[in-house]
Amino acid sequence: MADLFEQGGAVVWLNNGALVPLGKTNLAEIIRTNIVIKCLKEEGPIWKREFLPLEINDRTIATLLREPKENGGLIGRVPQLQYVLAYSAQYCNAA
Image (cartoon, rainbow, N blue to C red; front, side, top):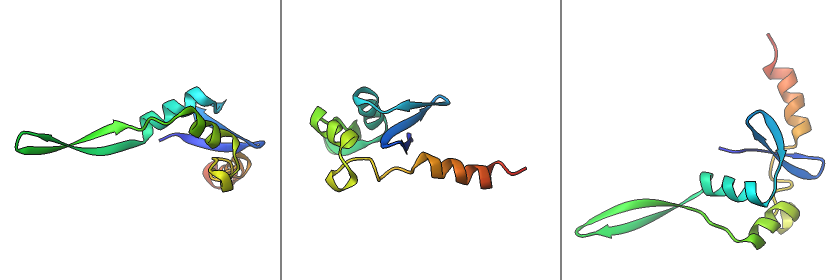
């Protein structure tokens, strides 16, 4: 699962302990590794399920990165980093 947050009007990704600005390349990889399509494949008399990574085009990725929620973008759909940090400070770091 990818940890995505909104920070200053952009989407960032928590990756290996660092907040990384979300771009075309890393968003495409996140989608490929976290979202799959379930297919059925007939092999003789037996049906098997197969999971294929979701591949999306550059236009869809651009929409996800740049457009507001109302137009299909990620901004407004992922938690705002400032609220996650405030919640974490209040509830998660208490000894």
